Length: 366
Image (cartoon, rainbow, N blue to C red):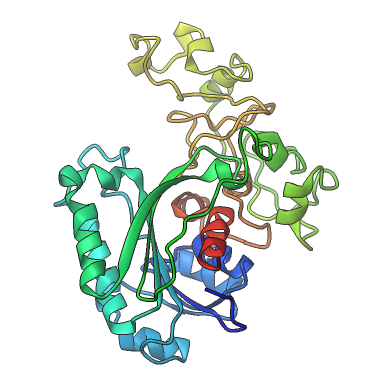
C-alpha cells in the first residue's frame, strides 16, 4: 500500500511503545495505545504525544472507547499492532501452556479488531507460541483472523538481521482485509549484507559507571562513534536511565575473574553460588556471561540479572543499565523510562525493538 499523509496506527498491549515507535519512524501516525501497565503507559504517553493512552485490563476496554480516543470511526484505522503478553508462551516459563490465562489474551486482541476493523493487523510474540498445544494457539489465531475477513501469514524474524544489536527471535503475524500482498521485510544485516551492529557499536559512547553508581542524568562520554549511536541519540545531550544496579561484594568478586567472552566457568569454584558448584560445564551456558565488544547481545529480558544471562558489561565490573538495555533494543535515547529501575527493565525487555518494528512497517508500504 502507498503511504498516505495520514496513515494511522493503534497499538494494543503497547507497553512503552517499541512497536509503535518503529511504525512512527516509518512515517505512520500513532493515534492510541492501550496497556494494563501504568508505568509503561507513562513512558508511552511521554514519547507518543500525538497518541491517547488508555490504561487498565484489556478485558475492560471496548472498541468504541478506543475509536473515540483516536478520533476515528470503525474501518478507518490503517493498522492495528500489538503483542499480547508473552510470558504464557515463553521458553523461560516452564509452566507455559494453553491454560495460562495470559495465553488467551490474543482473543482480546481479536475482539478489539472485530469492533475496529483496521485494514491491516500486525501481531508479535515469542517463538514459543508456535509449540503450545501442538500449534493450537497459532491455528486459533489464523482461524480467528480469517473469520474476521483477513488473509494472514506468519514468519519468524531475527532482530539482528534488521540492525538491532541483539539475538532476538520473534514471530510476526501480518494480516489484511485489502487486496494487497502480505510481505515481510527482507534482512538488511548479515553475511553478504551490512555488518551486524554489535554491543560496542551500541553502547561505547555511554558514561563509565562503577557498581551501584546511581547518579543521573549524565553527559555522554564521547561524541557518537558510529551511525547507530548518532541515530539513537538524535538531539539528546544527556543520558537518562543510566544507573548501575548495586551488586553484592561476592558478585563483584566473581565478575573480576570473568574475561570478555567468559562466563560462570571462569569463576573459581569456591566463589560459585552453592547451587552451581556441582553443575556440569555444559549447563547454564549464559550465566555470569561477559560478552565481547564484538558480540551481539543475548536476548534482553525483563531484568539484566547476571545470574541468568550474559549481562555483564564488556569492560566494567557491573551489569548492564536500563539505558544500555534500551540501546541493545534500539530505543532512541529520547525514551525516558518511568517508574523504578525494576519497572524500567520490564518495559525495555517486553518491547519490540523499534528498528525491527520499523522494518515490518516499511514492508507494509511496498
